[in-house]
Every structure is written in C-alpha cells, then in structure tokens.
Image 1 (cartoon, helix red, strand yellow):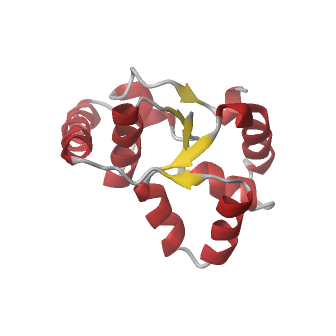
Image 2 (cartoon, one colour; image 1 turned 30 degrees about the vertical axis):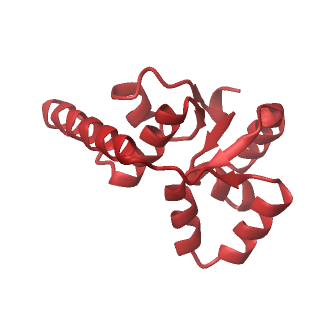
Length: 137
C-alpha cells in the first residue's frame, strides 16, 4: 500500500504543473499497490480552493483516508523534525514544515510506502521508509 503525499495529487490533477506527466505516470504504474492518504494530506487538500475537485478524484480513484494517527505518530514526527532541524543547522537542507514529518511518520507507523516529490525529509531522517519517487519511475 502506498501513502500519497499532497504534492503528487496536486501535480497529477494540475495539467500546468511541471511534474504533471510524472505524477500521472507514477500513479498509473503503481496503482496495483493501492493508495491511501493520511489525515494530514486530507487537511492540506481540504484547505485548497479546489477541494471539490480533489474530493471527486479521491472518490473516483477509491483513495481512502487512513485516519489513525495515534500518539506514536505525533511523537515520531516531532523527534524526526528535531533531527532534521539539527541536520539543517549543520548543513544546507531546506526548511520543511510539520506536515511533511506527519505524513512520513504516519506512513512509517502503518508500514506504508510513500509516493512524494519531496525527497529531503525521507533521504535525511526517514531513511527506513520506501520512497516511491515519481521522478525515478
């Protein structure tokens, strides 16, 4: 099962997005694994102006929300965000926001793979997660 990051869904649905073709190709190629999203991704999509479009896509593609986000997910996200902050101060990593760590922690907790365009969080502090990179498929 693959947990989708917000950026993949938005890229797949926005034909003007520079990563549109890669997102669509990856989603089609990996659909046999099945998809879910975290509550964090749901909230990010819900906050956007195209919510009804995203909601329709989620329904049509049967992508469900895996709502369970127990305390362990929040703790893991906090620990890894702290580790990332230390690495960032010591080097040149870009700033990342809490939702990035929540999406990754949720996937790790549930034993899911993740499809995302954002490699920095996964390559630095969530190295045990299997990242399905749409750009490398």
